[in-house]
Image (cartoon, rainbow, N blue to C red; front, side, top):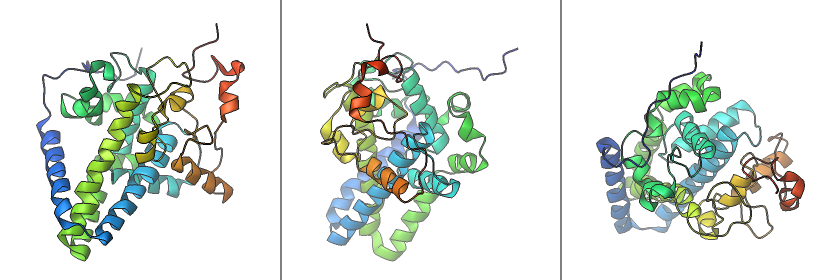
Length: 297
């Protein structure tokens, strides 16, 4: 008897059902981001940049993506939990559902079962998959299938259910301590910038850029997406070897997120860091061995 959860019938690319709650929330955040421009100060900018780093590089890059999803390295559990909390500050959902969506993307990359492939349109890949229909962030069956490891951990279950709390507490604290202008820069403007940076990885790096590796999908390396996402834009490199904690494999490919992981390794905090170099990835012996690469002819 098969006890695995039954997968719901999700029609990725279906624009017939607009998720009003998500759409209104994102709309309000974009309005807040525009309003922030009327409250510019260098202090507000500095706070926004600092929180952008914490949420996008520590939270999404080091945490949700390279640690929680792909397990490219190991850190003590308290630090692993801390990085997950940082990830919630990006307003990209809780760790369980983020991990489930991304693992599904890798398993079905650029097919009809990929939740955000540009083959359903660039807008769909960028943000349409969030705005329309049932998203991965609300599918318990998909979370059970693709992120059972996180689902077994009570901390991740609670954080995923209440993922909006850390950002809300932070916003209230900044409002009380720094005023409306600082809050608008630190929360809506910073969050909107981070969302579009992540969405560009989903959309732009599957449409434009260079392909170093002949992967089985449309992934590409795009330098300007790498700049705004702390290294996530070296997406073809990533799809050639998803487990690797290093996305920028050439010396000129800036990958600030990996540099921080390497620093933790040097300090004895990060262990089992899997980070093959360019020469190793380009070795003919790796074709058909490294996940994502086509077998040699």
